[in-house]
Amino acid sequence: MNNTDIFMNNLPLFIPLILLEVILDVAALVHIFRHKNYRVGNRLLWVLLTLLFNPIGAILYFIIGRETY
Amino acid sequence: MRNTWFFIRKESLESLRSYHLLIIAIVFIIFGIEGPLMAKLTPDILKMASSSSFTIKMPDPTSIDAWQQYYKNMTQIGIFVLVVIFSGTVSGEVSRGTLVNLVTKGLSRYSIIIAKYFVAYMQWCFAILITFLINWAYTAYYFPDNKTPNVWSGMSLLIIFGLMFVAVTIFGSTLSNSNYMGFLTAVVVFIILTLLNLFKEFKHYNPIALVTDNMSLIKGTKQIDTIMPAIWITIVSSIVIIYLAILILNKKRL
Image (cartoon, rainbow over all chains, first blue to last red; front, side, top):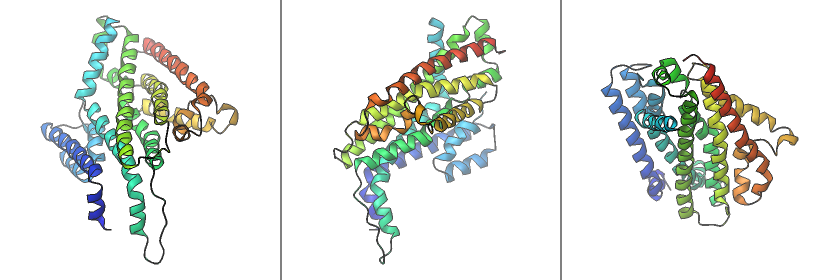
């Protein structure tokens, strides 16, 4: 039994997980690129965090990085 | 009453536009899927980790494992994610000065607290329920056994615990202008309650029982009557805490 087998056997569990993380990442990236100012950090930092740390980066962006007027 | 209703609508809209609802939905759907997933994968992971010379014998996963994962996620991470999101709800508005206009135009201060409490509590219920339903559906599909007969009773306790925990967060948020005060107050209260649980005399009355006894309840080894005092104390204390929060906001300079 290798990784691919485990992945294929549990598809009903993995597909929604992957979908959700993609939705969150896309929402965060759209917000990052539409805004110039952030409460903490800069654009490069947030893009990297969102892409590299799933799903923590996007959540962190929405909670502490997003500028609230 | 009308004011409270309008403020509830404003709060709901804010929760939607500030992406809080999106975060709650996604995080808690992930938690819901993770419970059965981890229960199902643990034997496979151990099998891969063990070499041919020694093998780890694992019993087949049951619904108990999936629910255990659910309650572990919810009571150790889930409720604190919610508290972080609700943490700045009053203090943020006070420090930004957005309440001044509304209060001078006749919005009473108690309706601010009540509306914020109501909306935060609705989000809490939404988070608990969505995770519960997803976990329940997958568990029923993958582990159709009779080892967890009372699934509802364990979850309803989390809903009741929210009454007090959200109230504590809102109370902490009115105390100071810092956005982290709500979170800090909730964590301190949680730690104090956990420490109180060391004394046997308090166990029946301690609200923390609502987040620690879930597994024995859903397995049916413990009946809900035994923690009835704790439930009543939770409900009464949440009303008292909200009342205190209103008193503090009445004295506060906006």
